[in-house]
Image (cartoon, rainbow, N blue to C red; front, side, top):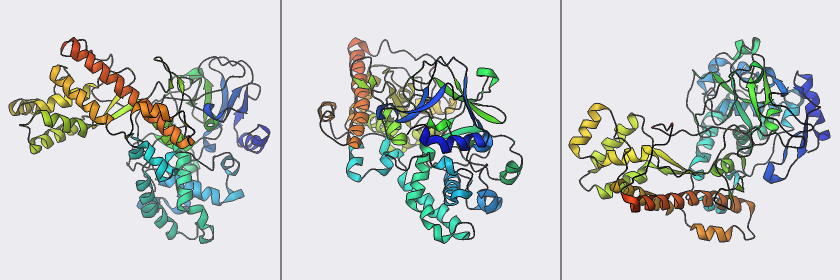
Length: 492
């Protein structure tokens, strides 16, 4: 899309108080591998330069749309539209249905109308993701349940607001489209005093989901920074009334593409506006990237419908940020086979205690091949004799993540078991990915290849450690936490 075709949007953006440094910032079409339409540096841009600014009132959220106040604050909460994304999705549906009466008409014209994310794949393509965590995180059934149990009843109670003649704007297909727009393009912004809008919607707190965080700390030119790296799956319905941020669609900011290790601009909070600021010098002709967290290909595919293929340190192409998730139940099952005196009742008791103490139910392997310390600690907990277990529970301390020959043997079997979840081998994938196949299938193969490489390399490391002697040389990762955390980023 050329800059000329964006003229209505740019005129709208400036009409409502947005500003762009048009001398330095332009728009261009890049190859699909680089994100498609994006933002480009027209001239050399210095570090800490304001590329554009967006008035907070121009962002679209349940605080800036007038729908919640028209619906009624108490009714909005009663219908649970203040939880998860359902309320924002409904606002976007309603604003779209309003057409020229909506403040955001020109903005909607810039949003994608089609997504290549697995949410929209057919069943045959989805089977290619078997073994990955993508399927479990799609949340399609949960999303459609939310549509049926929350959104439709809300619409049906207010035909004066949601005209039955405009039913196509409130369809399930539209619901998935708006949800995908939020998943791929929303930001988490700090709440602010918005005057009349604040008073209208002050009783409609929203729940943050997979949106991208906005920095609000002492950043360039005095901007304030707040970085929250928590992560929630799509359509998660946690009630976070004490949350200090809003999920919002941010015009202009969502036009920047994202790529692993390429971020050169970041969005910062000010009292009355958001500002996109360069965080390093950008050469003329370079794309301006706003990544905020380097996601693995599994998450890139789930949220945005693409994967990163970059040179890897060990050769080949892939995503250096790829990870593999291992469910705790795999570790429990494998360990139980080694500790025959561990009854199912005792095992369940230990697992419940582990979770109550904040232990992980999912362990993450990264490309650095470090063995997750929480995984080792859980295995040791399950291996404790009854008296040792009772002592650990009384003290409230899980076992230290010490590695020995027994632990390495169990970890080895856990990794082997995890590999069996994929219906194909790494060698088969490497042969198939070069064939004439659809984009969806290729992306699925790229995701599982990245995960399998990490599993294979970690297995090799475990075998080397076994050869060296009972895990000597296993070190605690500097700055490691007892529990892993997933980064959160939402962008196209």
